[in-house]
Every structure is written in C-alpha cells, then in structure tokens.
Image 1: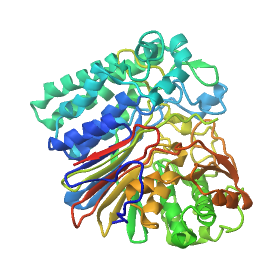
Image 2 (image 1 turned 180 degrees about the vertical axis):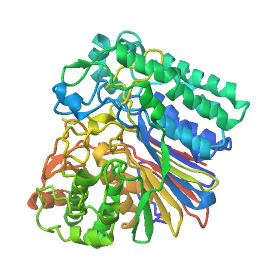
Image 3 (image 1 turned 135 degrees about the vertical axis):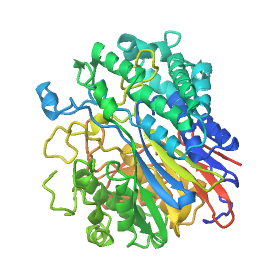
Length: 578
C-alpha cells in the first residue's frame, strides 16, 4: 500500500472493510452503497449506480449510450472486459454521407446515432454475475426520476447552453428540462416523468417473467428494449421527426429495428501490461484503453521518481510519451472485428523501447509519429459532451470499474414517452476510406471510454477512471504514477494538479489537432511550466480544478482494508464506504 501519512487532501482518504463505492454523483454513490449493504455485489451496485447516473447526469450519460467495463471476479481470480459499444446502423455508409454533402459525420442530431450498448452491457453482467432482481437495482433510479432530485450547477449549465434549441426545436426535451418554461434553478427539484414511466415498464416486464426465474426476467427486459416497444418507439421517432445537426441540415435517423435485433454486448478478455510489479488491465482497441498501457511501457524505462514529481523533466517525458502512444491510437485502433489491430506488437516491451528512443529530453516534438507496428494495408472546437464513471469493491473481494457515456440530452432530442435521447458516438467515425476508423455498416466506433483495473500477484488491487474524452488516459495515468512511483495515497494522487496534450487529432467532431499544445492546471510549479516552454511546448493555462473527475478504490488483500477517493473537481463526485 502507499504512504498513509497525514498530508493535506481535499477530501479524506475513505477507509472501510465491507465495501467501497465511488461515482461521479454523490446520490448515485449512496445508492450503490445501499445495494452493497443489502447484500448485493459489485455488479448489482454498479448497475444501480449507472441507472442513477442516467437520471442525475443526463448531459453526461443516458440509457441509449455506451459503456466500457472491467470486472475482477474473485471466485475465479479473473479480470474480464465488457464491450458495451453499439455499432453503426446498416444504412450508415460513407457513400450515403458523401451523397448528402457531408465531409464529417456531425456531432449531434440523428445521423451519428449508433445502437445503444450500455443497457445490454449491464444486463449481460447482471445475468452472469449479479444476484439481485432488476427491480431492486432500478428502484433508486426510479425514485430519482419520479420523485425528483436537486439541480446542481453542472447540469444547469448544460441545460442553459441548450435552452433555445430545446424551446425552438426539441419540445420533448423542453418538457422535462425547461419545466416552467425556462431552465430550473440550482436546488430546485427536477423530475423526468417519461423516464420514470420507462423504468416502471421495465420493472413490470421483469415481474411478469421473474416467476420463471431471475434470468428469464432479465431476458424479457432485454427483449422489451431491443426487440419490443422501446426499440420500436426509438425507430418510429427517428423516422417521423427530422432533426437538425451541427451543419444546419435536417435528417431522419438511419437506425432500423434490424440493427437493434442484431446487437448484443459481449464479455471479452482485457488487454494488459506490467509496470513495476503491477499488472494494469484495460479494454481492447475498440476503446482507447491500450494507449494507457503503451504510455506505461514507454515510461517504465525512465526513473520518474528521480526526475521529481511534476518537474519540467518529468512532465516533458510524460507528454512526449503520450504523443507517441496517441499517434499509434490514431493509426491503428479500431473495431478488431473489422480491422487487424497489431496489439501484440504495440504492447510489447521491445516496441516500447524503440518508441522511447524518439523522446528528446530537451525538445518537444511537433510531429504525429506513429510507429511501424504492422504490415496492414490500412493507412492512415470539439463536439465532446461528457462522461460518467464508477468504481466499486465489495466484501466478496470483487472489483468493478466502468466508464459509461453517450445519450446526451445536449446532442439529441428526448424520444417521446421514453424520457431519454439517442447517442451520437458515430461522430467518432471518419468518411475517409483510407482511415482505420472509417465508417462501415455494423462496425463499432472506437470510444474514448477507458476504465482501469490493477492486479498485483494475480489478485485485485485497484480500480480507477475519469470522464474526459481523449484526456482520460492522460489524467488517470498521472493518478496511477502519483500512487505507484511517488507513494501517494489515492486521494492525494487524485488531488494533484495535472497536464494533458491536445497534440493529436481529437476523437470527437470535428477531429481537430493542436500540435505541441499542453494544457496545465494551476498548481503545477511555475518553474516547471517555464521549463516546458523552453522545450518548445505551447502552454495553455486552464482554470483551477478543471482537469477531470478522477475516482479510485483500492484494497489491501492482507488486511482487508478498502480505500476510496474522489476528485473535488466539478463538485459532485463522491466516495463512500463502511
């Protein structure tokens, strides 16, 4: 375990022995904790938290979004990944978009919609590993949607940004989020009655089939969402309503019932690498997760501790390693069912050694430099909305880390009668046939969603993550290094100021890149910032406490001590345990 000394932290390092829960909203965290107290496990608690987040943080995640999930299952001493990214519809082709005059897939409206993946991902986990009924898992979210919850500043700002669009174009969204004809006040109670109705419908469907067994009830819920009235309502709305997008064009959606029926989330093997005695697990190259591992492999060859925490030498090395790893992401990462991703090479220590030699300790690179990892024939103001995260460790020794996102109320109108919008993850695709991330029917867009799970000697140790798009695997990398290389406890590691680069093309519309740019959070020493400038980095000073909302849980397997930490950034993340 890390240093437990009493250095100042913005929040206490929480410690317990029965269970530890973190999420990006304190009410969702409390709901997950109550699930554990009632005897549920990490999957039951994680699903309950996610459903609550879709109510509490609808500008950051929704029922029609996607999810990347990592699970450590103690009975088998095994780490599993859950691919909850839905695919592009069969009607979505490069030719269709080109024919309509699009050079990029827009970041909002109906055209970037893909099949919802998160809902099935959580159902799959509940079927295989959960213990409670869906009714028990859904109850906290239903109470929040029907009874209401207090509006907080982050949600209010999102509603205010979209007020005119809700009022002029999206009446279903205005009905819920402009309850008295305008944005609600902070502290006022906001209800989403259509979403509450949807959750009740799911509970009723499960109840009617649960007499045949718990799994039968969950399968009936899945059919309701993907083959029944919910999918039908979504498709009908997207066929009957033309939605304007960021280009000013109006279009119906491209998704058909067949796209829903074909889809299923899946459980996979994660990818991993070793770092100073730890094994770090990530989701595959359909996420950006391997970029975290590539950075670790490069950095393992440096004595980071000797450089000094947040020194110019340390931060320069960190930034240059990120540029190299993200250049490989841009060239190689995609849905592995459609593209041969050379992961064995990308994650090898020999490859990392080659890449490490490209780092000039005195000069920032202004190039995008992917490596030669394969003989593959593939060559090759951001519309980023937001994300949520959760981590849980239970009394059975199970651990989960999940980063759900998508289905944002700011980028697509609420579906009548359902209370949630479609997602827009299809904006990650490119319309260049030579790009590895080119649009193809049925292909899953690569996602930035990137939970992390760490084992030591084959057993559970730590789970962590953050919202933040392309920055997720830069901020959480610093959290991890703060803990492992600099001996900080997880709350202090979370509190430390961070940097990130936007040197590489963004995943989100309009895929802009800013070569050499480094964003710096206040608290980084001035001499370090000046040292970065002297090396050729272009510095952007960001507002205080603006980099991410990192969360983490950890367990000491020898003593059973559980720890939890949550970032003070944005005000709503919280950890709880007992």
